[in-house]
Length: 270
Picture 1 (cartoon, one colour):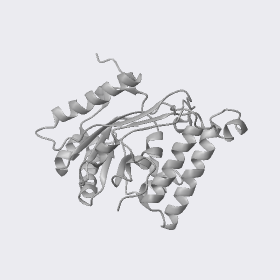
Picture 2: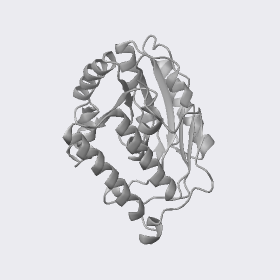
Picture 3: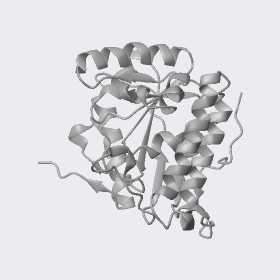
Picture 4: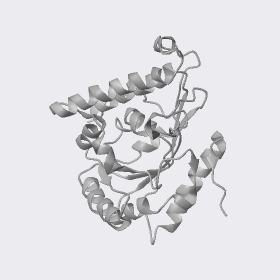
């Protein structure tokens, strides 16, 4: 059953005259304007998860609230290629770069109404109050990032299980989230999962350095109101053939191309 969404077109751009929130003035223009409201949304979501009454529509609606919070802080969203999410009904592996926690907060608003999905996440996130409850409810796939062999096995086994149950899997094949895209740190686990489960791939690129990783507390960094927020989904790759090397290179090239277009940072390859 399709969920309701405010993002029905192939593209979306935040209106230039989107009103600033009164919280911007109460918080004196600090990051508190964003974090207090964002944490409130996570708390509401987490409480519903604990009660067992959290639906896909709830997640999409709360994610829309997060987008509106960003926009009311001055952030400008630019979404492209949303129709590519609906080009086929079967589940897929969705592979893209990872910059900040903003991705997990807002992607439900425009992805979930088009396809059910879960993330591959760092296991420690399951211990975060409320956020962990949401990730469990969504049946996200946890990895430890300590033993690569164990992580690979978990993604292959649980990923295939989720895909066979009709749930797409979003994976960020980087060792950690970063505002600079480094192709050498972008591993092939995503295309290997797609090949293992015999499902299509939907590449995507994003720029979310509106929310900066903090120095002391990574999840509480400053917000950069003038940084544009971009998401673009490429045409699906119907099937991964052979080793998946060509498909992986295609995904990396797509991300590099879009980041260059958006003014993002790409690591210089030696």
